Image 1 (cartoon, rainbow, N blue to C red):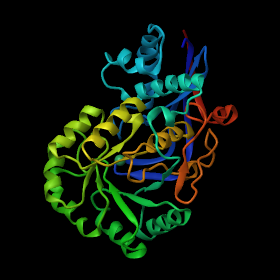
Image 2: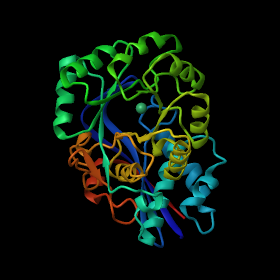
Image 3: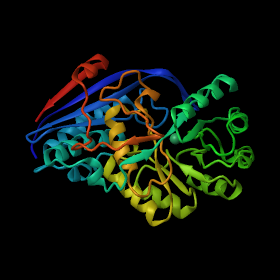
Length: 368
Ligand SMILES: [Mg+2]
């Protein structure tokens, strides 16, 4: 495959409602869309860095800089480029996994479209539909939260995840359990908002029979998570800490988690995400697919990944309308609590030029 150029586009998509987590409130999603133009096909990728470095150290403007100044020029020197050569060619650049994941997906999509192979088949998917959960942000009041959860359950979501932080944890969980019963699959995500000394606070969630507590402590605090896992009964799941297959293997060996949230955009791409899946399966650790408020591009690829055999828990693979009034691709629509895995070549969806133009802030084009 021969690359003729790569387009890097900064987009900004308004959210249907503000999304609050322990690290801040978002009213729109700034993101990157990468288009790889090759002699065989065009491929699409999405960068999941956010506008500010709050979820992780990466952010949109840094991602544009990394891609245009370092990553894309390095790929220009790779003979017979295909997706398997992207990560090795970029390994000398430290970190910046979100930027690497964006370009790898665009190359992988172009390669698979050229071959006529769906991403799901390439990754080893075993399902044609995936169960969908939804992530519910921190609200101003319990009644507001209960209304939001009721709406999502009515839409058919099969699992509810509540974002929590100190001061918004036991009460919202109790309220959701009291109103909707013990049968609702329920879990919480702290996005690193607690400290080692908060074990007694987190243990107060134990009576509510949660599926898991996601990333309660700092992303670098594996030992803290291992200690916490011994004092709370609710299973610990890691998200931010799991940046690679090696990090997953280390966390499991240390007893820092018994469940892993895999986010391809955060770990350097779908090929590393599959390796994390394989490590977890080999260790009998269930995985599920997280979300980074992706557009249809990343959502399509996430749904393909979530169809692999080790994804035994519902993911944050929500419908497009959870976040956006209008997606840039054909929208993903929940049916009976599931999303269908795209069947077309590559990621199986293509952005509408007009919808993409409407949300584009700026575009960089690098010719090979
Ligand atoms: Mg999370």
